[in-house]
Amino acid sequence: MQLLLDANFHRSESWGAGEGPNGPPHRPTARSWEVAKDVVKPGMVAWAIDTFGPFKSLGTDGIFSALLQKVKDLLIGPLVRVFRTSIACKYIQLEWRTAKVVFIRKAGRVQHIIVKDFRPISLTSFVLKTLEKVVDRYLRDRIPQTSPLHTNQHAYRTGYSTESALHAAVAKIEARLEKGGNTQEKTPENLGNTDRILLPEVRRSTQEKDIPRLCQLEIPDPRELVQNAQCHENCNTIMTY
Image 1 (cartoon, one colour):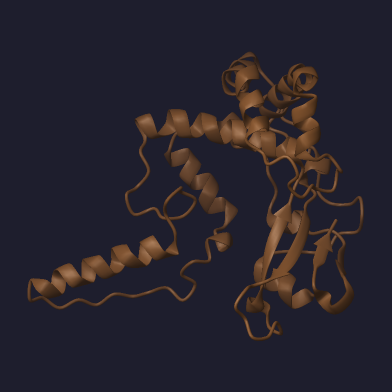
Image 2 (cartoon, rainbow, N blue to C red; image 1 turned 120 degrees about the vertical axis):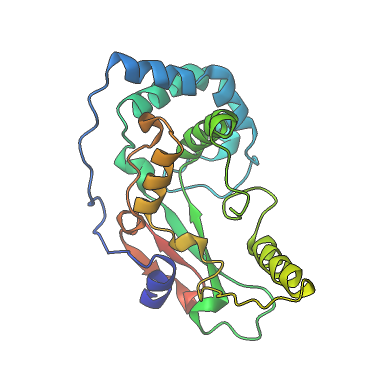
C-alpha cells in the first residue's frame, strides 16, 4: 500500500481522519467579488453540471452527479453563491479537498504484483468538480486569446498525449537527419509522468499567463489529500479518506 502511495503521490503524508491543514480564507475585496461574478455565472454552472455522466463514481461526500442534475434548477442559485464566495475568498473548504483514491488493475498485464501494474483514480466531490469545470472553461475561453499555450505543450490538452510528444520529438530528429545533419536528443526518464509536476511550477506558470490571482484557488499539495489509507482485501483497491 505504501509503495502505491509513494509512487503515485510522491509527496504524500498520512493524516488522521478529520485532520490536515486548513488555512484561513482570504479577506475579499470589491475587486475580488467582481472577478468572482465574472467567472461564475448561472448558465456556466448549469452547463458544468450537465457535462457529467449521471452515474459516475461519487466522492466521499456521497453526492452523485445524477442528484445534481435532477434538482439542478433548485441548486443553481445556492451553488453560484457558494462558488463565488470560494473564489472571492481564494478558499476551498477542507471537506472538498478530501479525495477517495482507488487503484485499479491495468489491462493487458500478465500479473499485478508491482506498482506499475496499477493506476490510481481520484474520486472527488462533484460539487468541487462543478467549480473546477466553471473555472477551467473561463480560463480556456479568456486566457489563450492574450497568452496562447506553447505549441509543444502536450500535457493537460485535448488531443495531446505522451504519444503526440514522442511524435513531435521523432519528427524533429528525422527532419535534421534528412538534411544530412547530426542530432542528439535527451529523453527524460519520467516522460509521461505529468502527475509529478510540482505545484510551485504550476503557480509560476499561472503568473506568467497573467491568470487572475483569484482563479488560483488555494488548492493544497497532494499530500494534504491523503488522510487515512486502507488496503482492501487482496489489495485490489486502496481508498484514502
